[in-house]
Image (cartoon, rainbow, N blue to C red; front, side, top):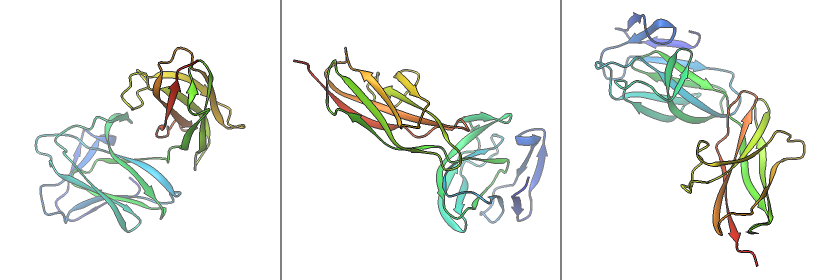
Length: 231
């Protein structure tokens, strides 16, 4: 593949598995035999990096992925390649998420032991913060949630979804939390007017998530809103 290089001797090309039905393997060493992937021409921003490999009992339990922003090492991620990746199913294989890394130089470099594939996702959209009016709010009154500084550096935002933390765990769980509504028109900002009738008095966590034209989603913006007793 373009941008993929091997250094050192002793690499073994195996066919019939992995991404594109090929995978490069190497016996245990001291780190002087490396596989590298280079991605050039990237715009400044955060990128989610995934790796895939063919798991087996003879694979390394401490394969190290070094992530570079140009020539600057930004992270080293150790994975157990005896365990199969299980974070993302794409292109006929499963991928493991190495993390999200901000790239400023325009070049992302990565190197490891069992070499199969690296996947770089475009920067996701972002939400600066979530606010509410009024704050706090009396139960039974209207509450407007506003997602502020919503943007996408390499495309455009298609919608913002708003949620309430229905299970009370302080984290967004779209399958179990209450989906309050969606704003698809950002011309006047992204907001939602909520009826607070029936909400239990106390603090409630609300979330907003932006989706862009590549179907990538932002990290949730969170706000804790006190609901006061009426009367």
